Image (cartoon, rainbow, N blue to C red; front, side):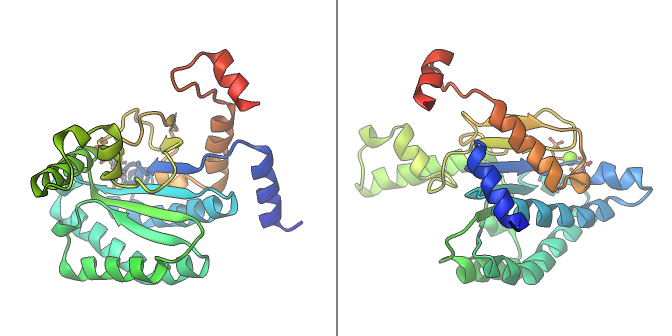
Length: 254
Ligand code: IPE
Ligand code: IPE
Ligand code: MG
């Protein structure tokens, strides 16, 4: 068996999350520990992105959603923001062909209107290239905020009411959900945060309602395939009850 088949077999035996999201935190502190500037941490973090994408693909995870830049990150020093934008552009240009080769569908979620025209065009081009791919769905959250996502969905519903497509009574959890980001993907199963903090930082607020949460002290540039596997193993041990009793949940499993 080659290593890919191996992983696929393990996946069959294990309860693999269908949709994993990661708050990739700790780049700045990683760089500081190395006596380098924060930017070096962001650059090193790109290697961890490659590792988790590859591992998600081999493990038959259906959707991987990565938090790359929050709506609050604009408040950072202009120089750091500008480096992050350049890095984003560089990675898009360099990596998307490889994603395409591996049948990965790539998309960016967030309010893209604040990005430069050049970056927006590059994102659109990358999404278009990979839109028919049937493998892993890789979503990168950029200028994303969970509150923005929910407010944006509400705005779309309001506009549907205004145009007469739906009535006020059609507004419910289901219809609002349909307008939030990632609605077409399996529900979020596992939310990982690296970097040692225990918070959501305005990431997938709506989508994380019943996600299992996994926090690790490992700083993002040190997060690799084996760290990812540890998180998946931990998920495998969790009992998800969705409000029911443990007994009910266990009976449903069999
Ligand atoms: C995460 O690492 C990357 C982004 C938020 C863009 P940080 O840059 O937040 O690293 P720390 O938290 O300062 O160590
Ligand atoms: C969350 O990390 C955002 C990303 C990883 C892109 P932050 O470093 O911005 O979060 P806070 O500020 O510590 O909450
Ligand atoms: Mg941080």
